[in-house]
Length: 256
Image (cartoon, rainbow, N blue to C red; front, side, top):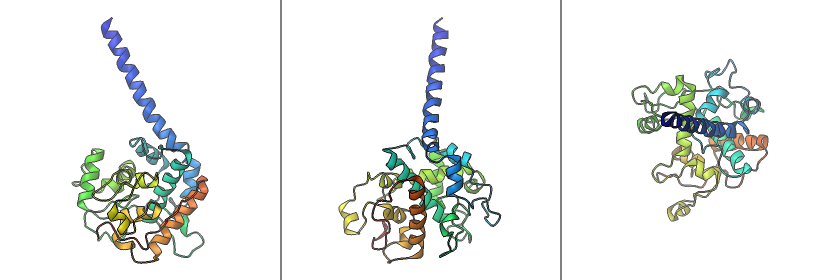
């Protein structure tokens, strides 16, 4: 009898764990539905895109389910703004859009690998966030339970792994950089050093986290404009405001 009771407790615990995981995925999926995903990324499967067929909706939801706080935290506006910011940044990283074209901000998720493959090979940019560098592959792999140092190609051949690396980067603070997650949720308080460097809360500092050394503190530039364009489009689609401080034109990068 005791054995059956123990089994019942285990079964209940398992059901609860599944329910919690499902709720997390449903939280993201209730905002980014299959049809919204398709509308946000209308050219991801375009024959011109090397990543066609890779970034599936199901892979996105499966990956999100492993990061329960991603896209499920805070108010409805917080959730929408974070998801718009995530897709805004990752769409720029993977864009196939042409600068100045009417559809410039409709070509996110066109690429799954860095075109030149010249940055830190074999740990060049891969996936939605264009994960780059041996250290990031090592840390991301440890976090998601995959050996990405020995097999970096997993990030461009397994879509769930690919999304998980992007979400790991998004959710994780590193060094003097806050997590993009906390910035998007307006939970980041700049330090005195941040304030002196012009780093202020807003979408712009997320660009600084991701690629500040090449884009920030150098005035208006096409990369920042592209990131902002995607984000603005997605905020409009999801029915939320962008907030302020969208660029990093005058921010010193975190490494300076």
